[in-house]
Length: 285
Length: 257
Figure 1: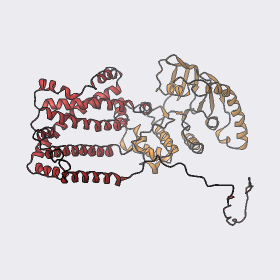
Figure 2: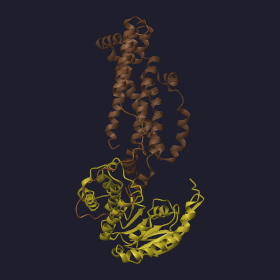
Figure 3: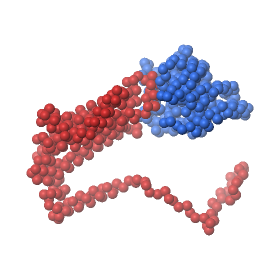
């Protein structure tokens, strides 16, 4: 092959030429070396691992390798769950827990979003809020439950306060970071077109911060679940936490694990609901 | 409308970025501002448009805005600054939503701007679905929707590839011919400056001072031909001589982040 070619101006289309052969002796194929380090979906692997784990667990129970008193097999847990559904105790306990999570999470999250937003927008709120949040956030909120019981009584209010306070701080941090992270160029753009302050907030800052706020919801929902169980274990007649504690005290491990199963399903349901919310609100991503 | 700048200096903390700028932006002209990186071009534009805080009264605006003008000084941004959660038409309509005007008129204005920028068929698309050139078209359409008296363009083509830049420059000039909107256009690119400008302001490296103001002196329609290219080559050489030494020094300075 020549190194250079003159630009031809053919009157007719030239006949296609066979590709020139590289000299076999002096050349070698270029080896692909860019493999690996790529995540590929292997959905079947997760399902298979799950099925194997459950089967092994069931087998260990049936073969009496493990005492059912310490670890009842999955079938026994499902039977216990069926009984709890039939006698209405699951509904009664679940309703109590859901009510506490609902009220506590809503109050704490609403307050957290407002405070986080204020800290993201106003320098004075940020100057006051950041050190306060940094100082109070690390306190394990369940440690304050006895104080809340003293202040608010053993009833629902102290549990709402524990859950509310527990989700408040992560929501403040998530919202503040999300508002702070809204690109300044978008805000300047709005201002350069004379958009009123409230419009900039509503149409630029809020939607821009929404991914971060929703990510905060995911964290605060799991915190709410942990706190409701803890609070119910400390002082409640009903609720999944109280049920699990009572089952443990009576050594009803199948019922105890049925309660744990309900909690994990509850966590899964909350996560799915938040994913749907994200899909709806963040379609643009 | 016209802009007048008298004795404008600007500091970021202790850092002087603009020093004693005197400048007139005349009605109906395209004034291009060039200069080395970090010389304060974008800061100057931000001050002219009122989005960079400047305490003094060094910048003044004069004249009556044209009929239907809703924002006398409108920006076209280098990074497009489109809201990623809004469609093309909603991004353009955003700047009209807070204006008191009938919904029908608002819709017509948006549609007119989309048509002028060749965006009608992409009206429902999100910014992420568009190429860089199309995104900047949305940015220009948004600025035009307010029927500005003065357009401030901050390196509007610098994020685009060379071919898209040429295409967009042609489209911008076609649009500009209709309304002859006064424009201040900041760029690094001498070819953009020569293609678009009536006058080119050359800034020194930081602190930015006006090194010279060069009049291109050839009608835009004559710039494409061979004679025009020869003429522009001379202007190019002159501009390059003015900024070359400054740009070389600016390139070797440590950036104080």
